[in-house]
Length: 581
Image 1: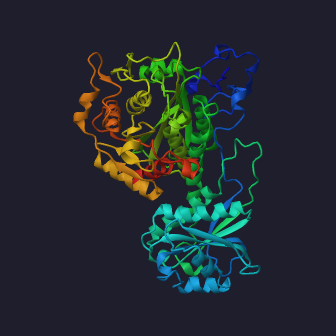
Image 2: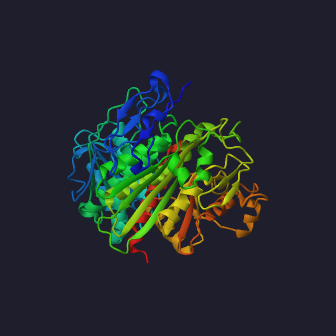
Image 3: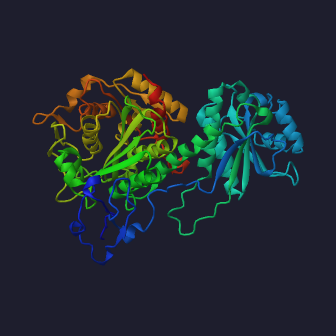
């Protein structure tokens, strides 16, 4: 079956310089349309539409929350009227037997005619983080149709992800029951003990969760369900600390938009999210924020001129043209001492394994659409950063995107590739391809762009899942300072990372008799040797570098599939960069 490439054609000035006549003939299925030009691109660019197999589905949405408003207000919960009121409850608000032991919660329970106490007792609700109970309210009670309680755990120990779960539970219930308005409040102590900064983070986390809980990916449904929720209010009043944090709530919208963009890219099938589609999404971001974002995309010929043999070796067997995406954020307030940062994402839009094909039970070949999870996180972070515009930084979002397929032109086990820094690589496993694409992307970030701080993010190894399980990502860095800053950014995002060792003696397993290195080592310590491989392509002494292996948390069937993991961590890390020495 013919597989048409959705091929973005732009002028050589932005690196998509391929002529229409060079397009592979696909018979009557080839259709051309005009494409929106990113900043600096020619207005005469053409885009070839995807094959019928991929439909006309968008790889990601520009603004998934256009119909929803989340605001922070000083309204007292007793005065609020609307469809759904959701109450965050800490453990101290309940007695030993689950009885209500907090005056504010007791007053709310009295207003609802004892409904809160009854439903918490029946559900054996203990206010543990993430636990929840919802019920239809009696007619006329506070003018509210639905009421719910969500546990946040012990006061003073509430994490950002718990606050986010409160907001998410509220809007998910509201959407399910076709509510138009909803409100979130907190009782029982936790907000009263927060510092101002912690209160702002709580407000942002609740609002981010509210946006994410309202979202449902219906791009591929033939009959999508209409969404009714239009407004969510985070209530303050006597419950202190969470009111009027308008800036935090506005930042939440940007954070949620970035996370959803990442989720959509990772969730979409590989006949929709192609390398060219990733370039399209980068162009969409550049077009939406022309004051601070610019785009350059290199095609195969331009990558060849830069000597990117490692990246191009992976792409050889695919009919989809490779795309080297370079999206740049320039702070409008940047001075002469601007910090140049690179976020480098692995962009394998489908990984068959190549000649070392993924086969048999457990190979996960049907899930290899998520092998561009690193690229998705980088573009999601770009979407957030473009809207929040952190000062004092210049951020380069770099993705070497392609497919790893099988064909007569394809990379073979035993081939030797030459990366753009001149280092040679003996390919002893074509299914260890992500590191090969990242190698040239890292060289480009450091040598061509001149970045002094680089983070690469990738669904790189199954070994990291064996080591850390499906919920925790691996963090590798020779720099303690960089590792600490990334861990702080992840904590604020509610995402789990664990710093992994970079045991130099393991590099002996990667040595080749006929080239500078092999692309895989022995079975043990595979995540470590993969990180050591990438380290070979960051060569300047003053460059800080970290590698994030997110193979586990990028996907969670229990949470509906794609998670949007790492987009918020990367955005937080960039936002804090200007303040770091």
